[in-house]
Image (cartoon, rainbow, N blue to C red; front, side, top):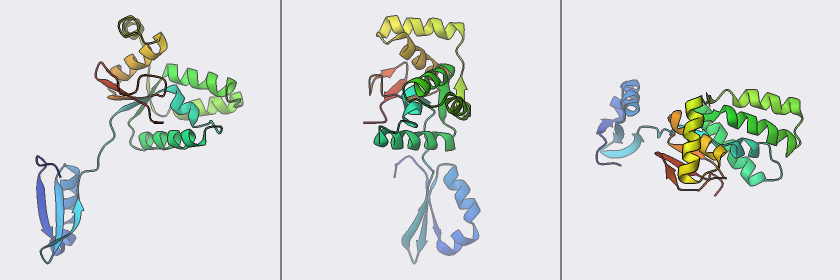
Length: 185
């Protein structure tokens, strides 16, 4: 337990009577220890929240890539986690790249690929502006990323993401406060 996090104790009889109040305290960041006869029997604590995370094209593509079952399973887990917690972000570029890759490389029927684009678009979708394009060009020139990766970085930053999940960029590198993480390692 973190030393800076508040902690409270409740006897099991009090916990039964005040469960909703104790859960609210846990949601507010407090750790609650429930005791019986002076011994700890249960803990309530804040649920760790996933950071707002940008999903690069390869994460979406692996969701459909049956030739890579381990990566496919991981991609589906990542997508599910970030869909449920509403922390997943993609961009128009990612949707476009997914469609092209899924229909050409994976051989997905274009109608199916289109429907998947509609489904993925239920995530938070970042839409670049001219200033985003210019900033991506600057990132490209400054850091040596491809223009397309630089645009992904820019859109992640602009949409408040702290993490980009990508197999194609430099794992562990932090650019403008956004960490690049390869979810398939």
